[in-house]
Length: 138
Image 1 (tube, helix red, strand yellow):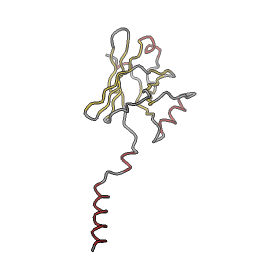
Image 2: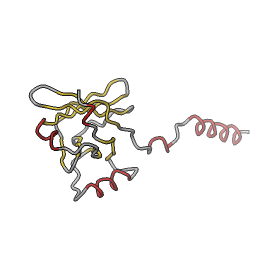
Image 3: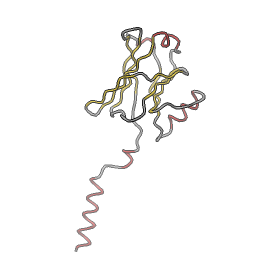
Image 4: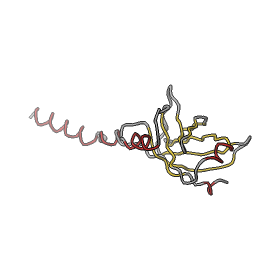
């Protein structure tokens, strides 16, 4: 009888514990907004339904072979937002339709293909967040 109760208790614990696959699922990230900011800056907002990690490293945005790491971070109500400050002169040189990537920590990559391969790995702290659409700039 004790064995039955122990097995039944273990079964209940397993059934009510969240799945481990959820923990290893890659965070969803997308471009949420593109606006003109003050002092000759363009603000690109990247958002996620999950909070962005806060630690000893920084988030980096990659577009058209350039990277940007000046941003404001907000984690509120379980959601995350990164607002990147891109100088207008740099923004003007970016290719419309270019793929946009985000990483946690600076990634030393040779080209966009290498960056895309790294971001496709499930445990890599790198994400493809969409394509640059300059027409969205408000």
